[in-house]
Length: 321
Image (cartoon, rainbow, N blue to C red):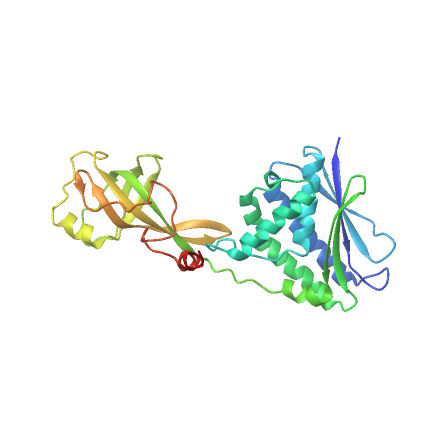
């Protein structure tokens, strides 16, 4: 048996009519946003989207979502989430570190989900980040609200979610004075803050030419991951090429402990690593070069090049406490 939910999009116009250009632009944007949300929340499910005839009263579009392999609770959750992202929720760049704005919105969203009888398991944090940070959703939403703003007869934009029994579970309204804040184009910074990891690796192919910027090819002892990186620890490079740290004869026999900086950026909506730099070499074979700073653990992500560095947020928090 198919499970169904409905999203009613009320345009808040004075008569039971709306400009064709407004309606068509908003309708196309709605479907694009819904498809993107379905792809993120229910990637393995077949969810069909239908448009029902407008009803009497203030002009409205009724969207029906049908699925055969998702529970009624989850399809209702999907509609509720979609109803919010069609309207009141704004774009947040979730890639930024210590993003208080996103953390506050996340808490609000979780509380709202609880009122619908849902849990955090219905929308895992990684899916939530993808939704808030989704450029497709944002661009289509900008088109949507630019069209509504251009049409002076539209006073409100309301999205109402109902179950298959037409029981209303959610209503989210945006009034005309707030339309402009949803029409701001986002120029997304492609550069991401670097991350740092401590690795213990076996050396498959070192760089033995002094002035070369080639990468050392290694394998992480704990994860078996192949990791290639540039040496950015100038003291180590100087001593290595001076012959202080001789390598063994066979590939894979040499072991080193390195702190690697991962430079990242967004490309085609995906995070990619653009360069890896070994910013500190703590040990190579039996040669212990420096103490591993307290708090560093193998393969754990850090956002500080110097593990002993205190961030501004940590400084302020310490002062408050």
